[in-house]
Every structure is written in structure tokens, then in C-alpha cells.
Image 1: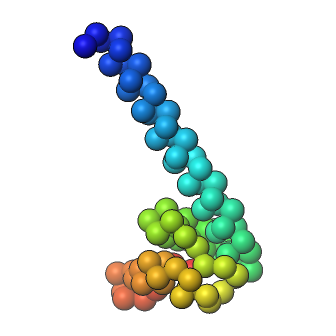
Image 2: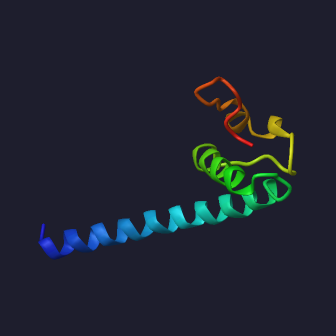
Length: 86
């Protein structure tokens, strides 16, 4: 194969991956902003919600509870065995 073709192929694949990442970030940002809107410590809530959303690809509805909607989000634990996701 020609080097130019390989380079073009790599660039096309990279653009698809970048679009997917940006779309996921937008989804998580919107969902986590809603989830954390009433949190006492919003920056911490947004941080952990974002981590959980990226890994689980979902965020429960509402500002509290409803974790049954997203088992992955519900079941994540921190190093102390407490829920990781807000």
C-alpha cells in the first residue's frame, strides 16, 4: 500500500473516533448537569458523575435516586466500598 493511502485511512478513522468521543462527552455533560443541579458540592458531583457516565454510558434521571435505571452506575463503588456515582 502507498504511504499516502495509509495516512488518509488513519486520519479518517481518527476523525470517527473523535466524533464519538465528543458526542459522548456532550451526552454526559448534559445528563450530569441535570443530575448534579441540586448537589451541595457541584464540582465533585459533576466530576464523579462524568466518570461514571463515560464508563456506563448512562445516568439515572432526576437529581437523586432512580439508580435502578442504570445498574452499572448504581453498582460502581469507591475504594471504601461506598457508592462512587452520585
